[in-house]
Image (cartoon, rainbow, N blue to C red; front, side):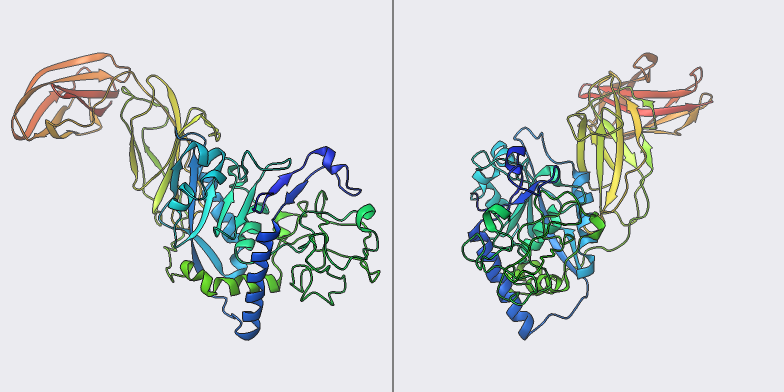
Length: 515
């Protein structure tokens, strides 16, 4: 079995072995004995430290996280970045009671590699190790947290590796409230399962009896915890406020375990279905929690010497982001004359350090190939050079900061590209602008051109559909600043493109003619 904490969906044939297994939520966390032993040793060290020098502070501590977003070599398949922002928001809500708050350290890290994407375990000693940030909690997000040689049926959803001290989460688990992220982060901070010792073998009456007379769990090492908690310091997960559990949550659909199972003292076992570290997936997500002792152990681990590397005392920007960006250009439903160089502009939002810009072929923005652009932008505009001609696109923008990710997208605007080719870079021209803009049809348009050399160009006006409507003729441009006046009389109200054609290519300026 892989040395990883794995979440497996088992097939129905396997589930049929269990007398009380129902029909949904059949998840499994198959931690290896070696990993569990490492985590348990750390937990014991934290318990000893808690007894001798307990951490009593509940001041907010900001914990750096480095998200490694893994895609195929060609760039496809990467988890949608808005889901990562959603996940950090959810994780901070779930850990708020502990005073631990996570923030994105240094932006996202991107890995483009087919093997890392589809079989990440083959890259744990190469790409993943090389990309690791040694001053943050590292979370890798490939297509799957499994690998082709993973034994047993099922899909790995996520795990914590105590050997590498990082988390791997399948992209399907990112961006939704559930057990995977808080559960695996609990393992990172030294917590084990309440059913420790039963991790790979669920209680069955035919196999283990009822009452359960065993003194050692199926792993052959861990003492079986009793219902009355009398041996809780040395049995099970060794956390006394997590009730004895023999992996009862596997396959249980709801949040009320009703099977009558008794321990060797003939006392009824009563597991806590709402623990983050348990396997009862049928509870209301708002009801899951860490016990008081689990919280103390998490904090004790955070303040331990092994966690020095994530305790920088750095405080990220805490300004709340309450506004959504206003999209400015292109205007909603606007038709552009060109396609190869489209500038998208929006209004800056107070508190935002970056913006997530998404462009899609459909207004629903599915996480698929229909979303053609999904990138973080540092600023309030972006020039896109990869769009097709004569096609309708939808776009939206989401502000965020390293810590504040519980934010909303802007409204969704659409625009249609044209067929003209626009050149935004021209070594002959340093500046090309027009004023006034908008202008009325009775005005003259003032065109400003600044150049570092002398050249002869040509000024022409096109409709938004690419039809030539005015040829202003040659423009002799001198070194330095140049001004040209162009009459607009006779032009209907609308949006036009003024083109400056030079031997180095064309430059365009959008001109709005008002009534």
